[in-house]
Length: 142
Length: 153
Image (tube, rainbow over all chains, first blue to last red; front, side, top):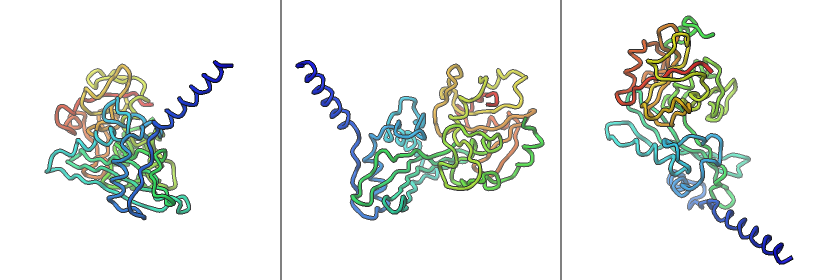
């Protein structure tokens, strides 16, 4: 009986630890969100794992990239030369019956044939302004 | 089987004339997108995930096409019987031909090789072009211009 209670307690503690490892949703400061809120929300969501969505599989510039932060850092690091055309595009739209704001952030680069845009799409709940970590989708082509 | 005559029909065309789904942004990279619509590949993430639109979606990412190929290897080692095939260009260290993996580095490109020429989407010109392998080799400067073949998935 004693061992059963120890096992149950250990399970509960383990479950609580796993839950605390999940990235908490960042809360934006303006409703509806502004461009700066989208950028701040992405920066605050750096720890969201790439395993969140199939679109993020093998998306990092390094094979061992495991988070949204590592993925985006790889492409930001390419914006090195001032003579290239670089930009950060954002978009905000109401979605899912206006229950969320669907946001996108795309890092863009163009230097001759080296032209691309890689980024993320994610939701912000309209009710409390919180980013939904499990809504992250990785965008980009090339 | 894809032919040179079929590919010639796409020369000079913008991606808007090729993708029915509506992923046409000129600031995006459409090299794998073009190849995938022509060869009807739907591996991994597709243009249907980028935009909502009608029509058949197609793959978008070079690193998701490479592992789907049959035989792969360095271009100079291409067996003569692999024609047509896919042709990739990137830095050699981004590719592992033994595990068939390619990293998602920005400087990578893909085209379709048939009978001595390569058809690919020029993102700077926003249209389909045809080049010889020697011309294609200049798509990126060294060291990002190592070429690889991939048997059609």
